[in-house]
Length: 575
Image (cartoon, rainbow, N blue to C red; front, side, top):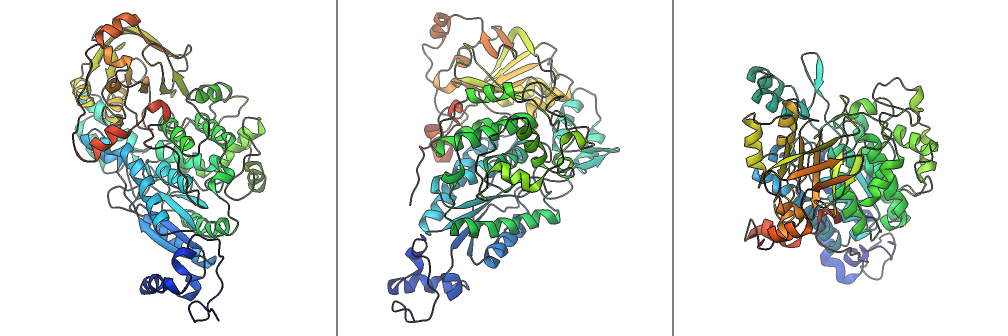
């Protein structure tokens, strides 16, 4: 019999944060609120595990997450936890693409992290299952787990199955490139209309190795998700099994006090980068990994991507560079197949810990993935005979990007170009230029004032890059920007140029006709101008923020450089 509340109730671990709202006579009003929602004595004596759920009808990436959250909820309950579901926002990158609304995308990463942190902090939760569907959900959810340092498991919503058109698989990438093909006369409007009805057959995130699938895969390499959790499709039974497993594991990590700070390390981030460059993952992962490392107070700078890409070959050829999607990888064993190949070649830190409490090497041993050499898959390559000798991500520097710029190699490995630039002050003007079929082989296009603060929000520009690719210029037209590219972007596209134009970076000094040199082998992005010439051009550079009120004005003020992950606040943990 408890002397505090006068009723028989199991003893609760006094070290759990939730005791602040469930234990003692003075918490009777708090318990009354919980009882109003159907919780009983057994629940109130159990670890309180939050289920952060960004379900929404805004995007197919998230439309099914209520069902997935229910499976996670049931897993927590069955394992002896007290599940509490709560919501947060999402933005559809694909639907906002090419519009002013895309400026909200990167901001949503910060809002998601802030909102999950606030709920976990305010309600004194003991642990979390964080769920992600669309692109910024994943880093936002993992950033929240890092900030709170609560025992946490990340759960991916899964990817969409490919559509089918004219006997071939198609995805949203084909739709964006189809727009460019229609503009150049290489596709009819009627065929584009038919593809529109076939490209996205159901729920789930974009199917290629775009940002969502890249970040969910990285969650495995970092240790935030159990191995094998990234690849089951959104509407597959295995996806719901993963949700139940995540709920059960969340109770275990709370009971064992296994926090993100216990398994995240410089080595686990290097493992994540190795996986990213080996699978040809999205350039957005550069931004998000830097931000997550900053939240975890782990020393990681942008140059690490070059160092790891130089020693790590590309061994998976998925969209956007190839033709296969995440489901194809799932059918032959998923991300563990790639991680195992890297581990066997000595390219992975096998002793890095994971959320399970085991090392990544121990988890791989338990799964025992089939070696890539024994898999009949035309999109997988061995480390000894890779698709590319170096990984897919390169960081360019030079007098145009002294703090770095990012490119993903999706085709030719030795791209080089020198020529005059055509400068656009925003995405819309560049898109109009491309849509008017004015692009020619050898062009260099610069789009500026789209950086973290200048946009604000670093819009992704899949519309522009896909229109260029759809016109047949993926590798003979270079495009660079202080904004971002979608994970579905392919070709000669360089993003994250830093410092950005808004803060007076060299990109702000460019004028039409300036000679640009881009050399992937030399990791160079430069302009044929002296320091004195650039300084003179920038002497009167005093840009006005694009917005003077509301959320976009706030993030124009708060965003840091893309070279640092475009973070908005220093790392902060609470007890």
